[in-house]
Length: 358
Image: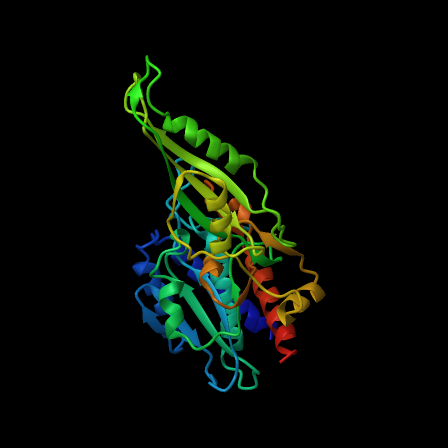
């Protein structure tokens, strides 16, 4: 069995190298989708494709059984200017594999894929397993997991592959982006005319920077609000009648996004327009068999401040994978080959232990 796991791991690493060498920016993932499709075809494993999303279900799929989802993404951000290596060259130096998307989320993706193949042929599973490699995660796009979910059967719970050092993120903050406008009255700056929209905005900005929501999440802490952009004024001698600013709100499971928005509206005078209320806080019960299994295997539990496709999944999810979130979106991104090997082994142990509860 150990030889089988090593074979799966080696195959997954070779796939990761091919993925790194293939550009897959969000909305441009067709070629990496082709690679994942070919990976299944070479092994005569049935799969389906919707746009740039590839998914497969275990051979003994039984609609009478609960279904779990193993999901990660194959799109990447664009490389920043700090890269000293070719981001599209899968360079191995010792135990280190460099390349764009190697850590976020290529390593978790191929480790979950190897895990799926480990369980694929078993006929004694108490659950169904679906593996999905999805698109547009980095931009929370609508043609990724959100497009795919209606095509899948009801999901009991999901494991989302992201770099967490194989610790378990049991909750994740949601995202609310607000476009705000403070309205004033134009006037000549030399006279006592008009009502300065910038000054009105400053009062609201002060509230955003100092307000603390009463409820604090046990796993995610405080709701965090950050003013991240501002624009006002056309010329030096005109009192501006309009000041626009945007606010990044990282919501917790203590409030729904609608509740969070309502509290904000009650406390500011500016005009508010949320860009979306899709990206909800997410998580999993502390009593869930997956969580209990992770604890028994020595995994730490934590609340994640970063966003993933969990925000678009209307069922219990947890985030776990090889690699380190601190490396994501950085120059000369890398993952350790030993991390992938350990990731595959831990995923298999985690699923085996969890399935014993069914």
